[in-house]
Length: 370
Image 1 (tube, rainbow, N blue to C red):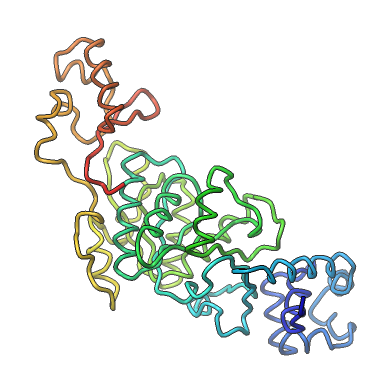
Image 2: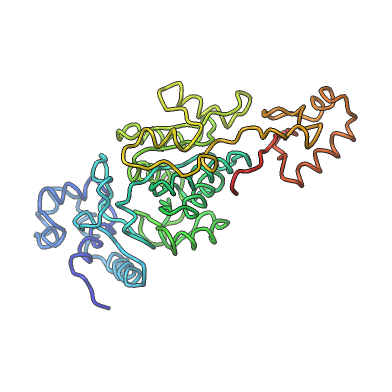
């Protein structure tokens, strides 16, 4: 394996305990590129670093971690991109806290493609997942790479939509790039590595930890021209991404939902605070210059009731579009509990209705492109 001394020096500093992102940037400002930093007398580095951090730079543990990272980077479709590289994402140079380096598996050129973040709840409704996937596909077809965080629910649906479109998707991880989290998304992660890009700023082997995910969210927003929130509770981590996008001067978009759904509260709060309410991919594209509109609006629209829906089932006519319980349906339709339960089961098997927590049911729409 041919070792790039420049990359090796970047890794030696990035992997040394006690040297965080802000400290790394101070070293760069004071001494120049990493090779120049490492050429300094260790006493001189103590003007910026504590003695323990200076000692770690040359430790066996750091050298072993550097060798492992270089071996990983030598594999096909793997890259480690530093602040000094031409391929470093220009959008991240605009944020307050850009990472010194990024681990990339897949199409590293996507890091400089026009992108849109699509995020939302891990515990999404089936309708929310359909909206996320159809919006992401239409926006990907229009020229926007979809960025998200590989979480369950809305993130995973957004990645699927991005892969289905022409501009693909980027998954920003809150773990080392060699760890897939959650494991249920392993197949999706493999597809993204093959046709999109997996990205992490964290060292290889970094396990999931709560404090890493808000930091991951700032990169999702930073790589993107805007952030679309599909479903989010008031305490959702997706709102962290939206706030990061707003702080970075990006556009923030939100899809409204039922006033009765907890997963609409976060989106409604964003809209109240100035996020743009969107019902179709066109609503997003009209705010972002330089993109063609999708050829067909339907795949990227929030689904509306189909004209013949009520004719397909008498019960659907009584459901509306908000979550509803069995007792309410019995009262509206004047059916017995057995009749309502039987019809709900049939509709659920047919993909027309989904069961929600708390004994609630919600209508789904056809023609979502899933």
